Image 1: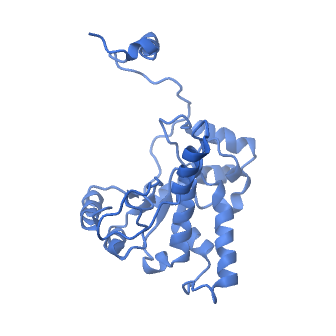
Image 2: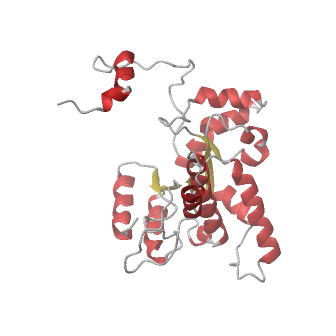
Image 3: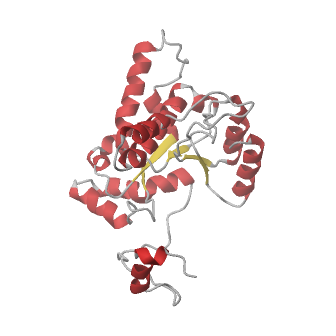
Length: 275
């Protein structure tokens, strides 16, 4: 995204190969958000090809801006500086709030700026930021627009931000994330199960089913969350094969390290370079 012309070429190249989604950070590496006019050709290319705008948060950290870049910053920089100066003994804030803050800022920017009215053919997906925060954020966007659209220089939107999100966007959820299962009236048509495998919090679809069943989510909504919404977003057909048994062990090739070899490699002495 640092070079919009190259990004346009890549969108068209992979679309011709059948790719359904373009993965884009909420801002480029220099902290520029998608409202920058230089990105308009990229959004035009997504509309022309029908590819989904897949927003994957990853904070920019305020590196020096070269000539031609505006002074915009990642919302996660404050969190990073707080962690660095506060003496926190772990990385909880960087693992959780960095991604959610970037995703929330992107959602607010595109909904409140009229992005989807300028690009009405674009559909978007919010990846790897969980989804529980979304209901609160969209409600706040609607409230602010109703109260202040005539006095805070807000654009003249044709519909409420929530209506725009429900028309154009979906979001992912992890298998152990329980609040969406309790709010099917909100999440019913915008939620897609996904797993950030092979991170520690990655899990399989059975964990998602267990969570949804625990909270009594109707099977029709479970089906939408587990696949129907994603198929509609990406315009793909229902699968010919259905997996009905949980696989907990992966068949490894002969050269794969044994458990003992893995344990040995994790011992401190294994990190010492041998002569």
